[in-house]
Length: 454
Image (cartoon, rainbow, N blue to C red; front, side, top):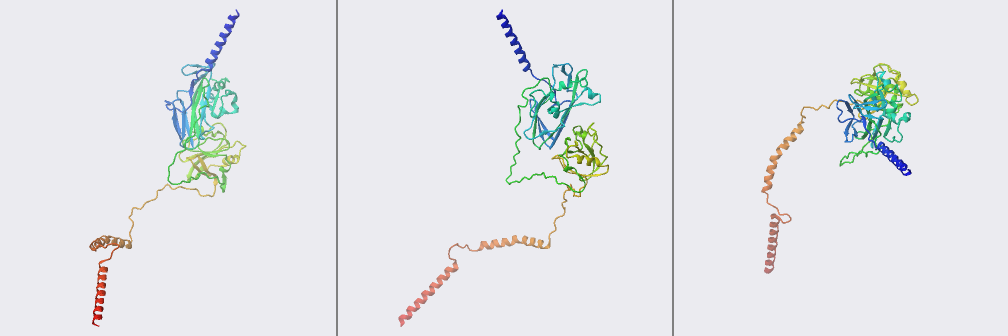
């Protein structure tokens, strides 16, 4: 009897172990892939400021071609997750959980903007005809730490219990449990030629293995072959305070960028074609500007106090920009926000920026008194007329033309000259020596004859 009981206990332990192993070894299924897609089918994907490479395991490599890059993906048919008592995907596969999983890295200093976010349908937002936001930065923040799965957060990766968050309130979860991801927007910043690796970004039914284990090597610098020593000087110059009748936004802002989502205490210039859903301009003072000449803009309408209810919803024409100025009331850009609110329609703003480098070099409300650097677009005009020669040059040319004939005559004369032996006596010298010898002999003979006669 005791042996039988012992065998039953051992069998129970083996069954328990087997079940535990089967659960821990369960494969994770990707319910919704939020990474950029090589073959996005009917979904709409737009890419600006970068190039994308796709590896076999789904990893996306983003290489910057500008200082700021954007990737927008809108799901037309896919992206559906059903969440009620259980979670389902479009084909009816049942799953017990729904995790938002992110794993990315850059060895080149490329960073995600704080405005990176996915959008999905939710009951409380649907009542307002809106979608809910799943912010990348929020998944790492302490504010939502209760939804981070234990021991699954590190540098560039996190597992966030999105399903539990949605199911935490009847006001969030749809009655049929159907929640659809509608889009995702990426914004990246860094140096041109540098890379970001997106290993995974999506909704899973279980926690995938290997998060945070794959990390890239730094991108090699391009080799430039040159025989001359090149001295490279930095193009960045310290921001100098601009004096004048007005306000210099650059002296107060924490940062000043182009087409970059607004964060605390900074300013940004948004250009035509930028997706304003990614601008985070709901809490900034937004100054709508129209270009009147190089570096000079006019305020189109009075800026309004930020309401926090939505991003700037206007459309920028080719010669228009939006200057967004933010302050949370405690940073050093409080003065900048006040100066932006003080602007009125018709006021002038001096604004110079470099879209390639993503930086603002001048932002001045009023007149700074400094010259606006204007680069001429006109090409230098080349004269179609032949150069006029002077009379002196003409004479010289005629002299030059007569030289070939003279040279021919000189050549003949040279050919007729007797060849001289270098280092020997010439014919004239030999004759002189013979004559001198004859004279000496003759003189000697005359002397002898004269002596005999004596």
